[in-house]
Image (cartoon, rainbow, N blue to C red; front, side, top):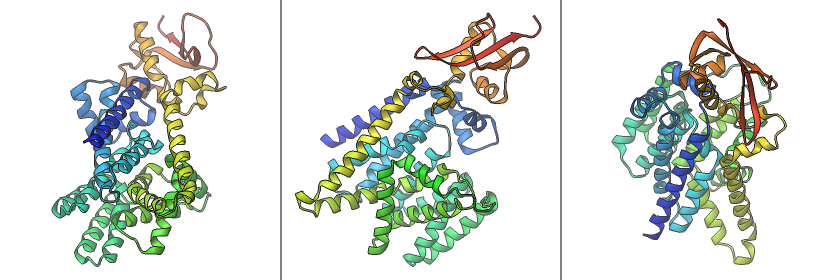
Length: 396
């Protein structure tokens, strides 16, 4: 009972952090393309949320927050099949919540959060032997997003390993259907994105956790401790690295497959730690402490990211800059009774979400410095100006 309460407390703090972060950021240009661009399942979900809660930042990000909370619950339940001790599972959940990739997918409008949830739901259904349900789920996946192509391929290989002919044929069929619907872009010649991909994985997991995850995948291959999570994570990791020799990959389509390997990785870490005498556990303790501290530091930086504007020489180099300015700029324009402007493409799309439409009456021109006149607009964070513009009434 005590551990369930701690789990609920973690879940609650996680949700509060995400809601707070929602109030601190604006819609990005890429998110506006998802919301107002070509049809997608994610777009539909977000528009339903907006129709319920109104056009605001909370409604925009609520589907991602809810999906993340459900993913944490699924992750905790899946971990029970790998880790017996409740305390160990809570530590694992904490690490899962703090992972930079998981934290970003919980609030940023993109496919990663839905992919993580979909993969965890499938694994939970498979582990608990809900055969009919996970067959139906896989069929749905084949029509939802092209990222699930890699899941079907991994499951085809897994079905050969477990000698399940029906499951193999089923996955090959939906793999072909997905290919016909979405296809895979594998163009180009080797351009050296392999190291970039490794760097992205390290940033999403933290270097220590990523390296140990790869080590566990390789070790389990040698010891033949292969299960469905191993096949999914190892197959997709290999595919992403192969593709990265030819092109820059969309890491958000691949990283979720490695993230779901954490229960397997934690199981290996705990067993390796506990079979050793106390005097030989120092290396494992140090690895855990370094990983946890780095994740906590990353979380604090994300939580108080606007403080960085005080020390960054060029505000546009701030890692969250593309999620800033738009909301405050829209509010400033509205305070001047301006509800439409002609701005650059990216800012125009972002302002539209906050009710500032496009027109030819006012011209919004981005400036490098504050021109200090009645038409100038300055957006500041922590008393540091980060955006300058000039808004001109063309017909004045």
